[in-house]
Amino acid sequence: MFKRWLIVPVFAALAGCGDPLAGIERMSETEDIPVDDATNALPSQEELNSDTPIFAGLFRGASSDAATDDAQGSDSPSKKTEGALAGPRVKRNGPDAADVPFGTVLPFGQIARVCDANGKSLGKLVEQASRRGARYKLYDSVPNSAAPRTFYVKGFKDNCPRQFTAALALFGTPEMHEQLRYGLPAKEYPYSTTDKAYEVIKAQVCGVARSKPCGRRISRLEQTTVFVSAYENFSENARWADMLLHQGTVLAASLKTP
Image 1 (cartoon, rainbow, N blue to C red):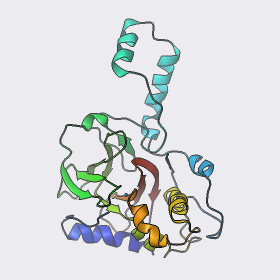
Image 2 (cartoon, helix red, strand yellow; image 1 turned 135 degrees about the horizontal axis):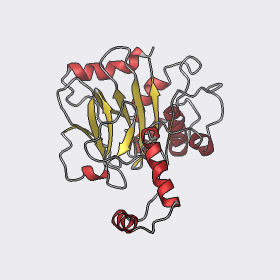
Image 3 (cartoon, helix red, strand yellow; image 1 turned 60 degrees about the vertical axis):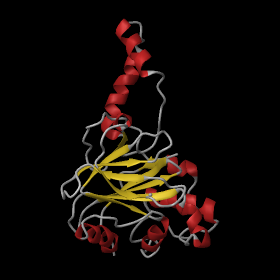
Image 4 (cartoon, rainbow, N blue to C red; image 1 turned 30 degrees about the horizontal axis):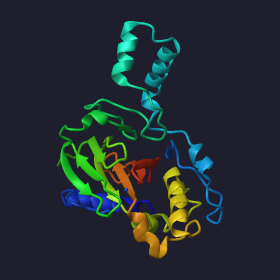
């Protein structure tokens, strides 16, 4: 059944990765999270927030070292100067909690904020969300390549791009997500963190139960919500990262396999 998830990206690759789709707080996971039954109550925000972010792991050690330095004090001139240049630190949560310098290459399955990419060339603009409220733009750093490389997404509240590594990436709409997700048996293909997060948003905007399509309010949902599918390679059995962008934030992310 999961081959259906790969039809769109493979078609896009054959078409030259032109414009395959129009149309994609905060948590993430290492594995898909099962649910008991599709009729269960919607997950609470506390349940969503309990998932461990997978995308901040690479830089967790660096963050811990920084916290240790702060605990030791900042009496030295170098620390005072560094603090003055950096400004106050604001703790961020979510899949994109890590900050990386421009030019960093992330392992597949990680997403990070790269503020100093502003003003630099991000590559080719390959997709743009067309809905009024979802102003996300997807950039390919090495267009026409089939190898894993850096992709950038712009359109966040803090005006900083996000980056991730993939061989193929594309936007997806809530309507497409529903067609795919609700066509899969929940017990055989458990709901991921991204799926669960979407159910919460859908309930708030559309007022419908879990595993039920949004209905006539889907256009309202698509004004603020976009999915990003990032594929590790072009093989039929490739892993992919599923990211949910909502109201200018990376709301959720999960790593999926066929």
